[in-house]
Length: 264
Ligand code: NAD
Image 1: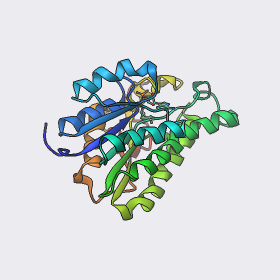
Image 2: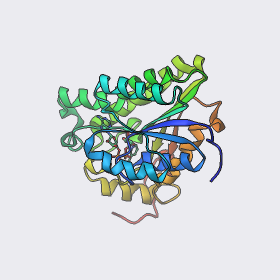
Image 3: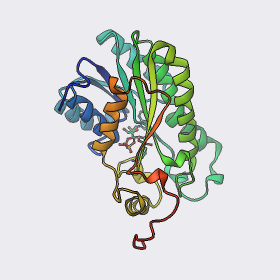
């Protein structure tokens, strides 16, 4: 516990349950004194999000499907009415039809490609545009990405392409919004067992592989992603923008399989 985020108000987008990366970041921010609002995808998730938000002292829940411009506009209007200004946003949202998170990327049809790009990449741009209007003195925008943006990972397929576009959008928006003291960064998290991850083919194997072959020889937790989130969302990182920060037990530096690891 501390006060690194005391006096800051933030919107958390993409919390589905207590395994969500968004929950790890929200909890870490709340422990540092942040005041939080939560945007959730739809009715079905409200009953899961509500008690989690309440446990962090928040009753501020906003429905928002990021596939809808109207929902996004309404969500930020709601924040403008209630809070007036905003200090940070966490965008922990990604989606692709799991039918295409296996097999060959080259077989992805246009419709599945466009939806993955829309929800997993464009939504951060649309959210950033609205959030920036509520940040007259600056702020911090954070998204979540994965190493599959940089290198080929089995089954990640169209999500890898969408995450590449997302990471590049972090850079372009950092350049656009820097003049307004709004910072834009990403966390590239190692594999974590969440609802979204369960759609990826052979995810258990990916988890095991990372555990055995990362320098720290384990997988990362949502609390560890939360710690990096506090850094990127608070004034600790006030000189940092356009960055994609790896929180993956060091796996991204590895060139070959750990020779001492057992076969899986
Ligand atoms: P999760 O299932 O807990 O969260 C994904 C969230 O996206 C859910 O809350 C879901 O409601 C939301 N979402 C999907 N479509 C939406 C829409 N149209 N409108 C609004 N919300 C929508 O899983 P997670 O693993 O915590 O995912 C959070 C982010 O972290 C994603 O961007 C994911 O790609 C990224 N990430 C995950 C891992 C991992 O291994 N779990 C690793 C690196 C990056």
